[in-house]
Amino acid sequence: MTKDAVLALRAEIASCVHCAADLPAGPRPVVQFSATARILIIGQAPGTRVHASGVPWDDPSGDRLREWTGLSKRDFYDPAKIALVPMGFCYPGKGKSGDLPPRAECAPLWHDRILKLLPADRLTLLVGSYAQAYYLPRAARLSLTETVQAFRTFGPALFPLPHPSWRSVGWAKRNPWFESDVLPALREAVRSSMPPRGRIGRSAEHGDGGVD
Image (cartoon, helix red, strand yellow):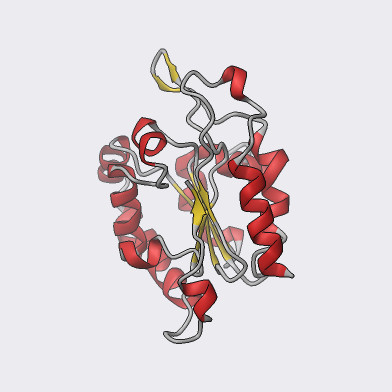
């Protein structure tokens, strides 16, 4: 029944046109999840490259995120292991100073339904200020830098991170504790949440990944 529920929800998300009138490039939801994924990565929204390919984190930001987490591409794109659920599932379009914020409709529409299908003992990486504002309301008075630096206070199941855009390179240089303190703890948390090899069933390991 769980597998059927996952497939049904993926199909429903793939056909979503809720915000179509407000999406300059049209709707193309990009998300990846399964009922066995014990690592959930919540980011912002697809950019133009991801919108074109339909592959989440298919850009330099994704390369940097995989470097931070220590995840290989093979594991990162295995829905049996990793759920990739942005705050906004479709490319929101360009603003005056970069991409527009994620559409506000997506998270209330879909997140709870997806999260109910994921393992309860999952690790959630909150990547960027939009995910942190939604899932860490008690950190609302903190800056992103303060939130990331205080990562240990949010418990072992939630891990706040900056968005891995090109801007994070300069940010990391100004905040050397990120590389010395945060990244080792992040990689250990990710390693601890990954399943031992051979523990994922055939249908999950080779099954239907995300929504293209």
